[in-house]
Image (cartoon, rainbow, N blue to C red; front, side, top):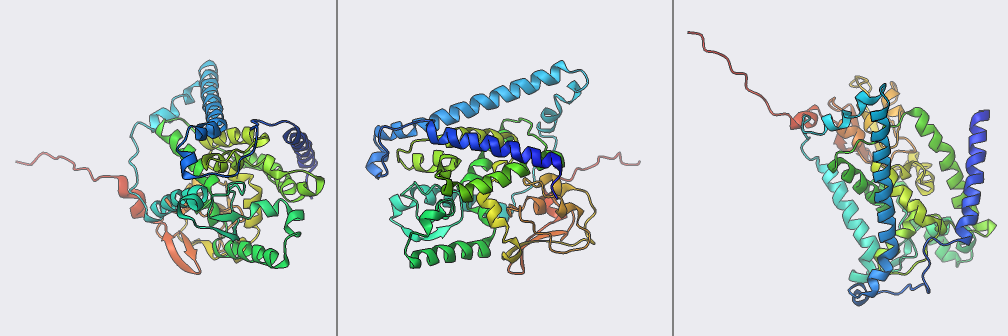
Length: 395
């Protein structure tokens, strides 16, 4: 049973999101005179395209301002508090090159290439290559308002079930077949390898690393605070349509994919949430993935997904590197001492736990039972160069 404190927190979150739903329904963040869902290569090359990008420029500007204010306030607090001021320069000392970088891992290179290519195809694929597979639905947060993406996103009909069941029975069956098929085949590897929203958050994390800004290290208590938010978003995602609402007014993907494709789309709370996604992704990698309702629904099928995370408990030394590296805060991969399969519903298959594990074959990522990536001490030590010790020759 849920504790009284968690029930209160969940109730408060529900009320807050209900007020947000009303705000999303009544007040636009940025309103176009007319919604234009047609685009072309000529339009993208025109001055009119810049007008379409204005909301995105505003979102980027607000995000940059918010990040700057957060950094300034944190530094101010650390300097003014004598008890914690000694931690003010911890991040800077770590990022001056004292720790060598690992050599690039093949799987990580493949993951980044896949994210870049797929994000490009989901935004401009239909426009440039003429590919259109609208009968196939992929369960990712790639805005369905973008008519130039190569295939549909499952998120629209899953959040508009009343419209889904108004379609011909053939379309409904094809929708569920493709959605469930991709979920079983890839599981939440879709989040780690294909989702454009995940790609955007990974870019923000890379920007933070390049600018040498300390991120936020979350503990179990902080992750538990996100759980009620995730549950409430799932309920709103599935049930808001029956109350006469539109989840698309919340979804931050609306503020990216259609606009970049040159489609004029009015923004409601989704614009403000995109600012929070960019800010959160800067300080905490994949923060939005921790509360993403579509990702959670996909995670419910993790036991039948072909992608798995396996652990050799005998090889594990309980160093905790996997838990520290996991952007989803999955602790069982570190604490499990008996089971070989440590795949969790929240795992996005990013492979960070395997990459950071210092023990040979202690962790591995498998597909249909075959190992595709295993932890290696050699990979961890690849950035260290052997040093020669000079010794005086004995006469």
